[in-house]
Length: 92
Length: 186
Image 1 (cartoon, rainbow over the protein chains, first blue to last red):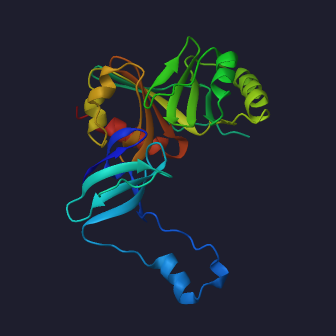
Image 2 (spheres, each protein chain N blue to C red):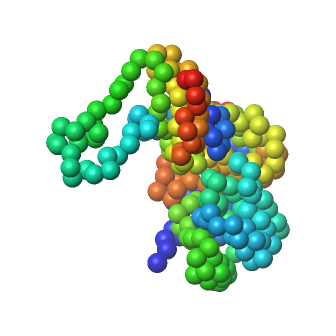
């Protein structure tokens, strides 16, 4: 359990949120030109690292907005929260 | 045809804690990210949708609750007939939706409003909510969207130890039973 600082509503318990997985995965510009392996790489393969990870979260039981979180997966410490479309903070 | 049948038919008291469903109340959901939207609502209802998160604005007849940066819930402070509700909805729809200023959805049948009154309401809510009520109960007009017994609710602090709770109709009976069950042990 941890607290997430929603950029719209403020600090709320984690149970109000849903995780949307890794952030900043860019959709290929020409999906038809990709091989099956390359498409699967984009669609399914995620880093799932131990350490600092960039993630998408949704405040599903609150304002229902998506945003990005920089979280250390080893201790659930949240280093930064920023809105969709914003650039990830440097030196994280 | 909207379904206004409610499963919560009664009003209950446990010590100084009073629980009752309030209806018929108008509830309208508004969504917009247009700049002129606020002034339009201001002209129509003499009330401006709040921009600050977790707040509300009220006048004698209506309250507008902040739900997200582009979403609000209007509800009537007093009971009004379904005919009057339809007139107001039509007026908003004509001036907002038809003018491409946002969307107006009548959610009167979607939400059930339960009024909770008494010194122990926050003890009751804290039994099964992850929300920290410390700031909420200090500030009149605060709004919170959170979970209560795993059910989505909207809470509106209307006065000291007096709040309105909105729950979806299909979950209302379950939550009502849970509230009553928990209130007995306060």
